[in-house]
Length: 262
Image 1: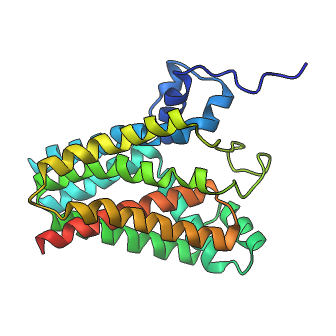
Image 2: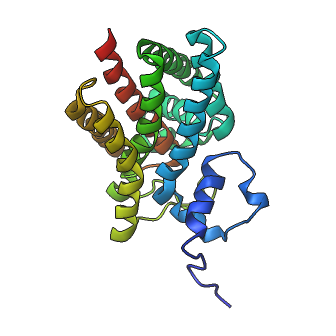
């Protein structure tokens, strides 16, 4: 007998998102049905509340004990441990694929390869250096507030790629055998609230400290241009594209805010 296409309930999807996007053992408490994982992107910013909160909390506590440089490194490590470097792995595969692939199929094959290449290694080094120095340019208390706001906001923006184009692989050839589903209007509103609430509070608090219009626009422009590039090369997205899109969009926001303190 054929199983129902959707057996998940309303609370399964955020739970699945926390399991999927973090390495905390939420699955020991409750394991949602498999189809709930097709909708995890709808609650990606919610996971960002957790990852951003942990990173900001570690930065705050570490800065009370260590030099600011060490506190930043510990904060970055905390997010890597919390997410299992999920997005960083996506960035490395993304750069490897687009850097070494000369056609659509070759790009997809390289991105699916579990081995990291030269392009991927260099991309991670450059990304980490830019992230470190961007955060280092921002005073500690403002960096903490920035992390809390930018993480969910840029995840909300990056989630739009699911609506903009189809998945580039089939469900059988996907790395985790899951294809993200397009979200409904209600889910889109929920997604927007998750991402806009932290950035809205941040803008209200930091109105005189940062160029709020550019803070809203630049990550969006970055996301749009990267999406156009992905579409031109693949005519679709992959999970690696989602991870790379988030990190690069987030980085653009940090770099913009850092310019206010140079």
